[in-house]
Length: 273
Image (cartoon, rainbow, N blue to C red; front, side):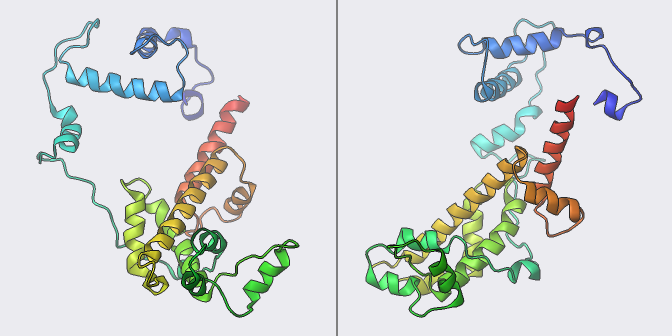
């Protein structure tokens, strides 16, 4: 960072005071049970515990510093644990009224329709009639072309295709904008309930089928989105790299994927040095 952003051609690490770093990593290794080679999970948990322990104490044990009796640093934690209303501390409000662009509304994607269909329409004939297609369409012909010999793929019905298409388009727009909030699944579920009427899928034997369909769609999409972010961070998504290179200022690009790609490119530059 000093070389890249500052007027420095080189710097000598030995010229810096390394005692705080040695004390910090020593505290991490000795926290709880002695562990000279902590993994990522152990390091993160130990770091969080040390922060809380130091804030809870007026004086850090074994350190040469004055006592500090301030309480403001832990106001967020105290408000979260006790529910106490503290002046200047406000809970994070979820923004459910997110305007959906027309490009997202008109986008058609039905790749997860079959997975939802296989998972739900298993034994109930009425559910199968509500979820499957009785006539051949261009979409069902495409499924037939990909079907192996001696197999019987289920063809998703018109409403299921429509519902999944709308859910996929909207969720890929919504998730990057609420992923930093708590209970992303609940926020997405509540928003989808106001956008699409899943009640038409219910039958007499399964009145909660619509909620089940919606939950399965949500799980599939959230998992796929998280997986795509990890692929970008690992440099395994060349398609998105090309897309971003061609349209770096496009508003239709996922902002979290853009940040993940920038982080990967920065990490790649550091590894080359």
